[in-house]
Image (cartoon, rainbow over all chains, first blue to last red; front, side, top):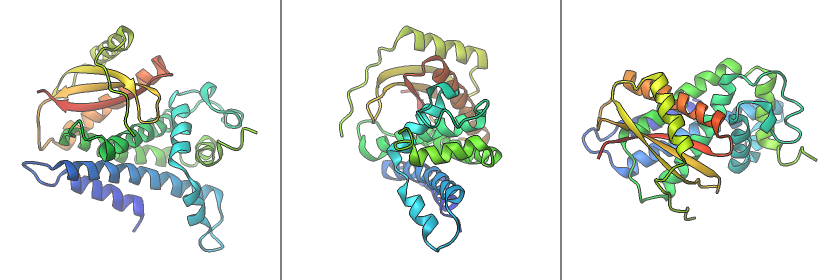
Length: 170
Length: 96
């Protein structure tokens, strides 16, 4: 079984648990699971694009090298919808128009990461089921959109930038 | 990590933009209005939170959630384009 598929299924299961009175702990774990479904999907795609299948363990190690903060920075830049806001090194590699599906993937990543942070650390504001279900559905839709553009050059640049943006501007 | 407290006082431009966008798309069934908050996100970036006000529904249909996600995606996209230096976060909450 693929990890991100299982994480997304778990997110949905948690988001719909406790039909009459969903607990905050359950809803918050659902958000976390949804975020990590998107995170692991993208880092898995990144390792697939960047590293050969052998030796064993190489792709897993590349996955481990992705950092949440760098991914967020790159996604925020791609979220603007055009190449002008992209960092040094990345901008020169992006060709043509950034596809709306790729922009949406980037926007969703920022939304889910922020939601995960709040779900884990901000106890001041309670989460509601409808909001959590919308976030889970957003990730489901985002993964569908990713499938449409994953083979494009700009998608490969996006995956690589999320790993190397901090260094390849030199 | 403690974030700066948010204020409900949002720039008029953001509020007008969201209002115009919702008018353009039409509020789907179940969405009754919106509120905007202004502040910094968890990484210290200026941010706008748009809260779409909905019915308190513990068992929303997939179709209803789909409509909500479509609206959220459209509002997010538009706010990014209009205010690229302010991260938009679109959420749903039931009316008090």
